[in-house]
Amino acid sequence: MKKLILGLLATLALGSSAESQQQTLPASTVVGRLGIGPGPAQAIPFSTLGGILFGSGSGIFGLTLSGDTNYTMVTTDRTVLINAALTAPRTVTLFAAASLATGQQICVADAFGGVTSTNTLTVSRAGSDTVNGGTSAVFRSAFNGSCFISDGFSKWTAIDFLGDPVTVNKGGTGAATLTNHGVVLGQGTAAVAVTAAGAAGQCLVGAGAAADPVFSGCIKITNTQTFLASGTYTPTSGMVYVDAHCIGGGGAGGGTLATSATQANAGGGGAAGGYARGVFTAATIGASKTVTIGAAGAAVSGANGGNGGDTSLGGTLLVATGGQGGPAGILSTTSSIAGGANGGTGSTSGTAGSGITATGQTGYDGWSLLPTNGNLAAGGAGGSSIYAGGGTPAMVGGTAKLPGVNAVGFGNAGAGGAATQSQTAGIGGNGAAGVCIMVEYIQ
Image (cartoon, rainbow, N blue to C red; front, side):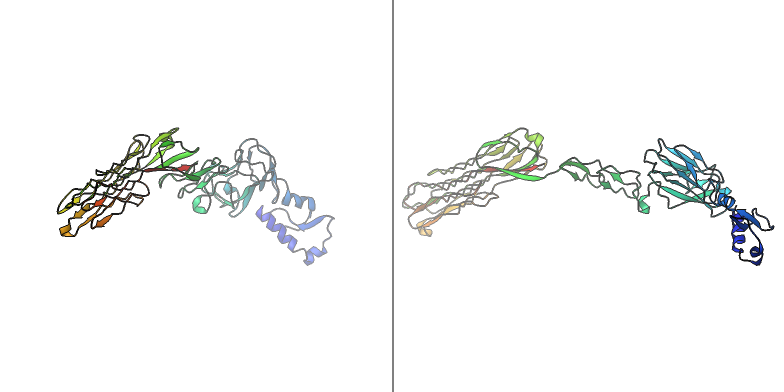
């Protein structure tokens, strides 16, 4: 066939020669010669030439139409077109690559748009030939196609083949289809993965370095509930987890005892309430949990300061104990020191998993000096919680007394009182009540 074409084209190219100009040709013919051997020129009808060039199937530029059916190509086929919607996967089987000279090609294409990802079109080899190094090429989308070049022996190579998924190392995804509205996830050199479509309001949440992220409920807002008094914690609708912070009540400062003309004394500072923090899920909290706020330690005249109360969430789920009251002053005719009180502690239980506790600050010592040593007295400062505000020390000289300074803020402790000679009993400073703060994370 190749030699026939070359013979025709060469003869037509010589149509301006003297010999061809002297010939009288019938209408609708061209000068040429059929066959592959030498011989005299012939008048070839247009119909014959048209059949050679464009004849159905066997024409050099001819077409073979293959509808919704499997088709096995014959050696005279050059272009096979699918001209119908496929109702099932179909196959076009090539003839042997050795049937064509090296570099010649045949083409297969979907001209109708009838190929789908379900009803695919497979271009398959004949015998042990290869197609792009494998056994076949598969078209999975409409209006797809490719031409296949023969090596003249046993191999077909597709030109601009887009049928199979393009691999990642060649700039593709390696996947035939992608989930609608999913998110594409890299998998190294393997085909990409695609998440399921996320529901309304969901976020893509990481699952660690060794796993793909997934859609789940995301934290959209935070909300804070602060308890300054005991009550019931009811989670806000949609709460996923709560970060609870509790501080116990602060202790009161120690009072001062009545003094004679040769005595002085000063109370020790109260201690701050403990701190406890825990993160709890909605399941752990349930419908609600009781919140108890630790009371402030109350000052008592001429005696130890009152202890601060415990602050808790859900009974034992989260507990911050109150700070101790400061000790009363110690009478002395020379000098005296009343040690500061011990701070409260914190504890967590349940399923917190990330609990943090801290001990409240210890109160400071109160001290006094008799007249022969300077005639001074100073109450011990109150301990401070994480919200600083312990009572500051009160200092007196001469003949006088001062009550301890009250604490401010949350969980802070009162200061001890101070008195020099000839004074009636006095009081230390009051502590501050505890607090519980719920920071909610809500979907």
